[in-house]
Length: 203
Image 1 (cartoon, rainbow, N blue to C red):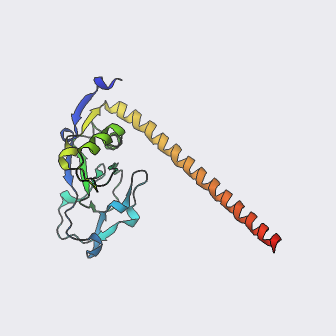
Image 2 (cartoon, rainbow, N blue to C red):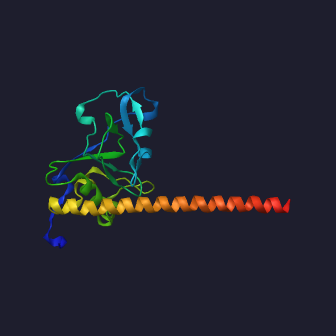
Image 3 (tube, rainbow, N blue to C red):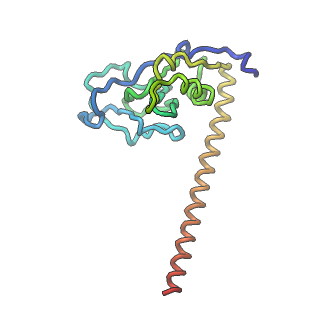
């Protein structure tokens, strides 16, 4: 299907966008509690959120609207690579730091969160965001920039089909990376064994 045949919308028309929780001061200095606090160091574009590593804090104030929910997207606002993650699970009460925007789709019968995250991470969207970024040393994406991000919206069936292909490709990449890592460890072990033999002979 040609992109000209798709419906195009700015992000703000298909999703609610808000800043992360307004922490004051360092998150790690807060009193320990039962609410997870996602920071930039806890996320990876490929792996997702490292839930086991997030800080558990007591929030100064808490509203249910502040908490993340399954299907939410979190979008990194700082740095030279600004990516979105769709949360397919939220295993505990959690918020994210102000260095993220939280994006919540208005109607999941029209837009798959995983598809939305995938599209935001594509080059055309990334180029748009980089051009709209502010700052010189550390780039920052403003709320206005992410709200106006133009997106193409195919049918829900097409979104499902596309995400099935994307998921298959991601699984293949993960398996390939594991195979490469295993082969590298084998080569390292062989090299170490050869070095032991050479040292024994020279001794």
